[in-house]
Amino acid sequence: MARAESIGLLDTFIVVAEELSFRRAAARLNIDQSALTRRIQKLENQVGVQLLVRSTHNVRLTDAGLYFLEANCSVIDRYMSSIKRARSVSEGLYGHLSIGYMNFAGVDLLPRAVKAFRESFPDVLISLLYVPSQLQQIQLSRNEIDIGYTIGPIQNQDIDFVTLRQEDLFLIVPAASSLANRPFVPASTINSLKFIMGDDDEWSFYRWKIESLLRESNVSLEIVWKISNITAIFGMVSAGCGVTILPECMKHAIPSSLVSVPITGLSQGIEIQIAWSRTTHSSHIHKFLSLIKDTDL
Image (cartoon, rainbow, N blue to C red; front, top):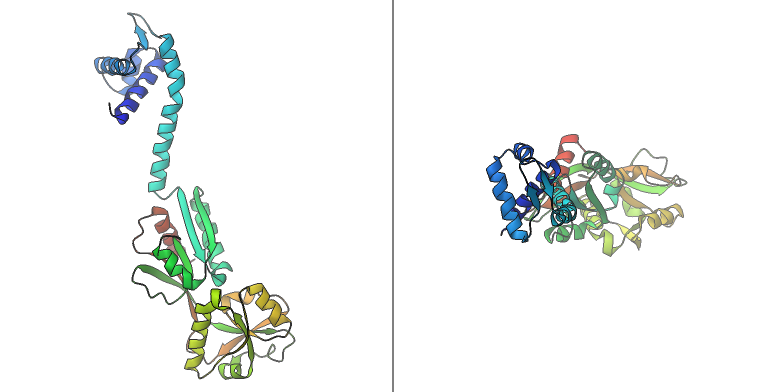
């Protein structure tokens, strides 16, 4: 006998056991009493014992029927709960969302989006994973992450994206530096400065993007330190070991010992994008993306 049919017969038996009346049970199940009788007989044949004793005036459980009821009430509860959970997963109300992010998204874009999504879909488990931009496209293609906050441009036909923000670039200098009081710094000034930039493992894509923009203005970086950790970069700049370049979103993340100065003369800044695999069919991924698009997060 099919398992789905067995669940239906079990549910019928539990209703009869609760009502102790074939008439009331039939009305509750919206079937006639003869169909109800056939269901109980079919279940008893399947189990191999008599579960109910029916007389003219009442219905009672046999000892075997009482045990069978007690043992199987939780089965129906779990079954109904699994149906509800499956529907929630299908509707994107429950599940798991894995989000990769790079440093710049973690300042404001990602926290605001995650907060709004959690408020709308509290049963979706969210994992936040720091993934450098250059690795996010690989992990998206392999379905190792569901969504990526990355530096653009995305050049992968298997990945879709939306540009969230175009970020101007700022020179980050010690507060005591003579550059700190300037309203802006021309790009040409960069040629005379020593820079502390991110390392090859985690910052190569960002550094490549910055160097490409500077070459358009006939400017090059003299990099004296390459460091992976943004906190260490801030520390080295504060100590006077050099300066660095960061997008506008990082202005509010720098310590008070540093000052951000706009860089002029560049053709553009950097793009911060949200990306996902074109082959994804996950409802909660699309709900997260809809939230981003609809609320300007």
